[in-house]
Each structure stands twice: as structure tokens, then as C-alpha cells.
Image 1 (cartoon, rainbow, N blue to C red):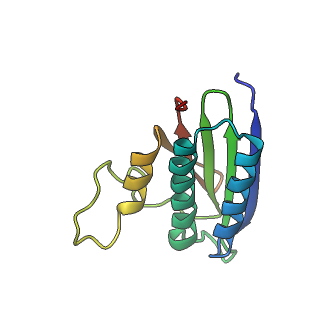
Image 2 (cartoon, one colour):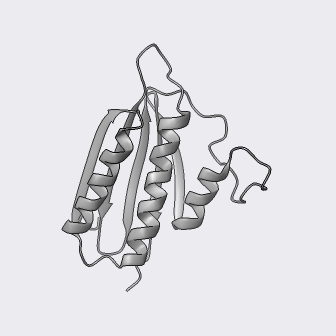
Length: 142
């Protein structure tokens, strides 16, 4: 297993203000890992923020309790990885989302296509009432 050089995480109610907390954690991880090339930082940050925003805007609670947003970011010498989770959410109807960007007339569906365009891989898993999208950027430019 590759050693983690930097790691940040948060978990809080999935409300719009949570996106600022995600931004703050990403800013902090770049301080911890200044060797990550700027282009990788920008692409990865955009993908993570888009995934977190999708949870805040679209996750549907399984019960009367609100959905919680979780973000865990790890930097290794070879990759950037983020797990973006929706705790207590129902499974979304379209986890694959397709790779193509929808047409100009489409009112939704751009988020996952944008994320897939920005990072190397996106995977989805569901476990114990939690939806998690794992975003990986590799290899790092440099």
C-alpha cells in the first residue's frame, strides 16, 4: 500500500454551507502537499467540489434524518483520491451517469460527466445507507 503524504476529511450535514468547508479542507491539503502540480490541484478541486455539490443539491434522505456529506481526501506520491459520501441517502437512480455531456437543452446530468472529464477514474459504491463516489487523479503531472 502506498504511503499517504497528506489526508483531510470532514463530515457534516449536507447543506450549502458545507461546500465552503470542503473548499477549506482542499486548501489545507494543498498546503500539506505543495508538490502537487497546479493543474492537478485545479482539476481535482473542481471535481471534488462538483461531487460534494451534487450531494448537497440532490441527495434524498432515507429516513427523517438529514443527509450528511462526507469528504475524505488523500494525497500519495502517485495519486489524489477523494471519497465523497452521502450518509443516510437513498441510492441514486443513475450512478453511472454516462460519460457524455448532455445536450444544451438538458436541465441536468452535467455534474457526473464533468467529474469524469476532470479525473482519471470515478467509481461508486453503496454500503450501509451510504453512497460514495471515489474520485482518483493519476498519474500526477510534473
